[in-house]
Every structure is written in structure tokens, then in C-alpha cells.
Image (tube, rainbow, N blue to C red):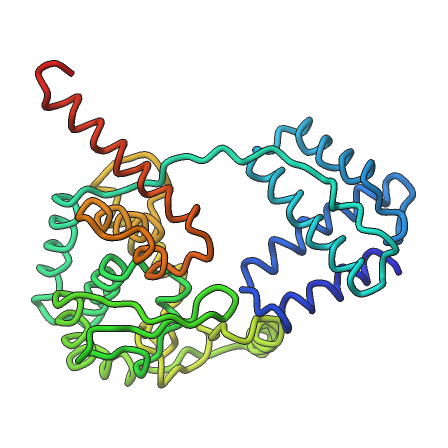
Amino acid sequence: MHLDRAIDDFVLYLTVERGFSPHTIRAYRTDLAALATFAELRGHTTTDALSLDLLRDWLWSGTQAGLARSTIARHSASARSFTAWLARTGAGTVDPGVRLRSPKPGRTLPRVINRSQMQELLGSLALRAEHGAPTALRDLAVIELLYASGLRVSELVGLDVGDVDLDRLTVRVTGKGGKERVVPFGVPAQGAIVDYIRRARPVLAAAPAASKTAAQTAAAARAAAQSSPQSRPSSSPAPSALFLGTRRTRLGVRAVYRLVASLLVEFPGAGPAGPHALRHTAATHLLDGGADLRAVQEMLGHSSLGTTQIYTHVSAERLKQSYRTAHPRA
């Protein structure tokens, strides 16, 4: 089978059968397209030509090109998944990826905003919302919910009104791989969401819809056709969406990124200033407060406890910093 066709079939399998997110699908396609290009430059265009030596040479070329260890590790994982699928479906006679190894990605501590900074940030948003501007009320509800629940930004913008239970203080989330979970949130987030739904959402829902060119409409249709089953498009009128943009559409991921980045400018620190910083912050503050690691894992939707354990390192590092600052014999 030609490599390009095999990659297309594999991506379709990941989309339809595995229910992977559009972001994950793009990563797989990009990695495997790079592998196919590398193989073609060496005269190999079919799946039968994939060998352990070829895969190792590909990873080595990435190392020589200065790619990060995390990128090399991802390339290796993509290749192993692809060759395993080829062997299972009979498109490949053997699985050369079984013996493929890659460097462990260096893990850096995630960015975390401390408690006093979070109080200051939320306080400034509450002041803006006092004037009753719809977008200010929405922004406060978005940040309160992100921090209270530790949601991924894609999960947040994918929420519908019916996903939120304001009596039980829980939200039903569709996470990676289409897995559903129920996540709790607190009273401050409840108040912000109630205020937004009552005072701001009707105004945003009544705003003029965004007009589209024929090309934009066609592009949106293609994107919807290629997206995973659990993804919800943000470019069309969304009467059921919890968080709305200014033109009756579902609030987009980029809009949330811009909002969080603008807020975190006031709090310099290492690491990206995006919505994931609030997810990291929520997890770290939970563990600082004595929450059980497995409960935090379930709340965040991590399939592996090892992924959640990074936050124990953050808490330990914060303890060391406090010790060095406060203890006379540090």
C-alpha cells in the first residue's frame, strides 16, 4: 500500500473509531507526513518499505536538525501507533515499530499562579463585570469556571447550557477520546455563571449573526466534516452553546487564549500564559489543600496517574521555595 494512502486510512481510523480530537489528529498527520517525505527521499513509497532502520534514521535526522526531545518522543509514538495499526489491519507484514525507542521527553514544571494572584485576577474581572457589560460578565464566568474545574479550553468552549447543573454544582464534560466525566465547581463560579446566563447570554444571543462569504461557508463545512464526532464547531450560530461570542457563535478557543493571556500579562512568570495555566493552577491548589491525587486525576480527565503526578512536583517545589524564603536556617 502506498504510504500516503495508508496515512489517510490511519487518520480516518483515529477520527471515526478512536474519536481523537482535531488537534491530536493534526499532530499525527503532520508527524506521519514528515515520515513519508523522509522515506520518499530514500526511494521508499510503500508501507512494506518501513523498517526499524528507516524509523531510527528518521528520528536521528530530527535529532540532528535540533528538534526538542519532546518532539522526537512524539514522532516515535506516532510511528509506533501507525506501524502497529498497519500490522493489525494486514497492510504491513511485520511491525517494525515494536522495537523503536525514543528519548524520554524532559518534563518541565507547568506555570502556576499563586493564590493571591488568582484572587487579584478574579477581583479585577469582578470589578469589570459590575458595570453589566455582557462580555465582561461572560469573561468572569469563563475564568471562574476554568479555575474552579480545571477544564481544558476545548472542553470549556464545547459546553452547552444543558451540560451545567447549577443546583448540584457540576458540569458534564466531553474530554479527549470522547470520554465523558462530571466535574464539580464552587459557589463563586456558580454565581458568575448564573449572572452570565441571566444578564449577558440573552444579549449575546440576540446580537447580529456573523455574515460569511461562500468561501468561508465551504471552508467551515470541510472543517466540520473532518472534525471528530465530539467536537462542536464555533463558526455557526450556536443556540445551545453555554459561552457565546459577540455574534451569536460559540466562543472560540482563540478568544479564550487572548482573554487569559491579557490577564496574565500582569503576573510575569515562566511558561505559556494561556488557559492551560489555569488548569495547572487549579490542580496544584487542590493538592496544596490536601486533595487526593486520584480525585484530581479523575477531575482533570487524565488517563494516567503519572500525568497528574507532575503537580505533586509543583507543590513540592513551591514548598522548597517557601522554606528557602522563610526558614532562618535555609
